[in-house]
Image (cartoon, rainbow, N blue to C red; front, side, top):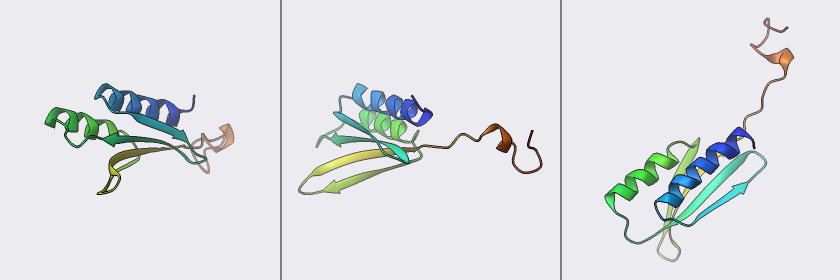
Amino acid sequence: MPASGSKAAAIAARLSAVGLSVRVEEHVDRTSVEAELPDSLSTESWREVLDAVAEADRFGLLAASVNGRTVWAAVVKKEVPTTGDVGGPGRQR
């Protein structure tokens, strides 16, 4: 599993532990995690949700009167440099 997938899985596990229903999706450039938030969430649960999504590269909250609230997190897939590019120009092996 790519590093982005492992990090997203850890975020998803933390959100699930709070009791949220979580969706994880793989995209070309990122792995995303989404969870619907209930109308009432304890202060401790809010802290855990925020701590979990803060581990991502990007995160946010979508709130609408029709669909409720959804917290989301995105972990960007980073390219691993080839051996010749390690260290940048002038440091090639």
